[in-house]
Amino acid sequence: MFPVKLKTVYDIIFIIILAVLYNLSFSPFDFKFTIYLSLIGYFFLIYDKEKTLAMKYSFIYGFFIYLIGVSWIFNSLYDYGGKNYILSSLMTFIFISLLASFFILIGYIFNKDIRKYQKIILPAYVASLWTIIEILRSNILGGFPWLLVGTSQVNFIYNNIFSLFGTYFISFITVILSIIFFLILYEREKIYYLKYFLSIFLLVIFTNTLVFHRDMNKDKDLRVSIIQPNIKPTYKYNTKNLNEIKKVIYNMSKHSKDSDLIIYPETVIPELYDDKEDTYEKILSQEKKILISGIFRKDTNTNKIFNSMLVIGKNTSIYDKRKLVPFGEFTPFPKLFIPIASMLNIPMSNLSEGDSNSSEIILDKFIIHPLICYESAYPNLISQKDLSKPEVIVVLSNDSWFGQSLAPYQHLQISQTRALEFNKYILRAANTGISAVIDNHGNIKKTVELNQRGHLNEIFRVKTGKTPYSRFGDYPILVLIFAIMISALYLCKKNER
Image 1 (cartoon, rainbow, N blue to C red):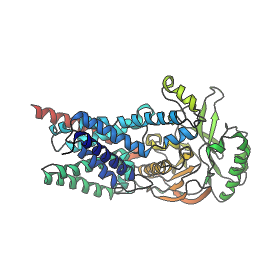
Image 2: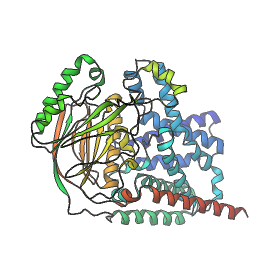
Image 3: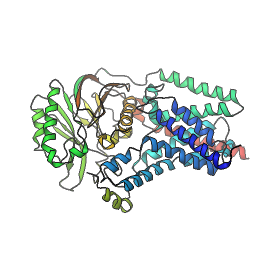
Image 4: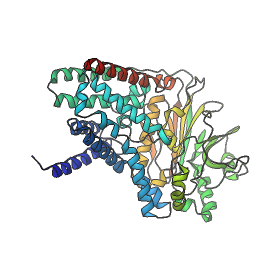
């Protein structure tokens, strides 16, 4: 036997390996199966531990998952917040610790005491708890729906199931399969758990062969150009470069002569939008087109500043971003964090949220579902209305804040989940990349690679029709979780009698 301290060191090294395996399942690595190995190893580590130790190990597991997966937050805080290493490190540490703290609840429940639950309900109970934690983490205090288990499984064995129940359900299935496999290895009732595993796995495979939506005959072909100017923030927010940036934007539009739709990324011109701005008018004067661009705009009545999407066609429409990035676009808990945020001095970090009721932009021939950057991680922001016209999801982004990191690849993968859930094409324009056309099956058709200036042109069929997920959202998985939790509590009380 190892001494206690040495055993703890080995356990922590094992946890770090598990955290690496967890992250390897996400883009750009896309080793889909490694998240199963990570979860199985995690359950193995805490299953026979006392509650306190299981909670500690769970926190450490979550901490290293996010330290590896989202440490790019430090890049934006440091590079564009005044090069303050100590403050940037402190805020990154606090943020990652808050995310990791959600894992403590798993350790509180899943430890040596969990054997009181009947074996038939135990896997579903733990998977439900995990999914609840993902939902809470995605929504509490603004939310951070990054590195969800379900997101890692894009283009694996669940693609059609995304359109049925969404990403949280895929998280649920992935966790339940992982924990049953762990129980096959660990418990004596191996045949029982093997049957349990095979029944769920085969049901998943069968369900994935079905199609839960149909395309209507109103689909329309659309020619689109997506522009990636590749302008770094340090250059972009230097006012001396404004005219040069406008020239770049105008000149790049010349590659889109045959397009119906031209898309520029988030806040492409680093100044407040003025409807007398002639850059967009010059582009549109070439032919009859629709132009989409990210802008900053100021409401003259309230003096609030918004991160917005401008759509210019026969008429002009503006959509204001509803989900802002914590610390990047607004400061949560102002009394606590504003003194720190003011020292970092990040550009345009005092923005306001848009109207929560705003949603789709209706044009003559099709409908745009607008999402700006961080919003692409929130499927509930996409309208669930029954609309008679073909629909497309447009995502404007600016991942340049995060430098050469995992963030742009992870962000692109999140957009793939939206394409699958809603059976819609996604047109993604990102300032420094990765710009892409994603088809309704979650496949990336064309890209402009990271940190490259370029454009892409694509002709595709804009889809009509609704998926079950676009109609019902996350309600089915919430009902399922509620039923499992009630059943688990009932069976637990029954055993105690």
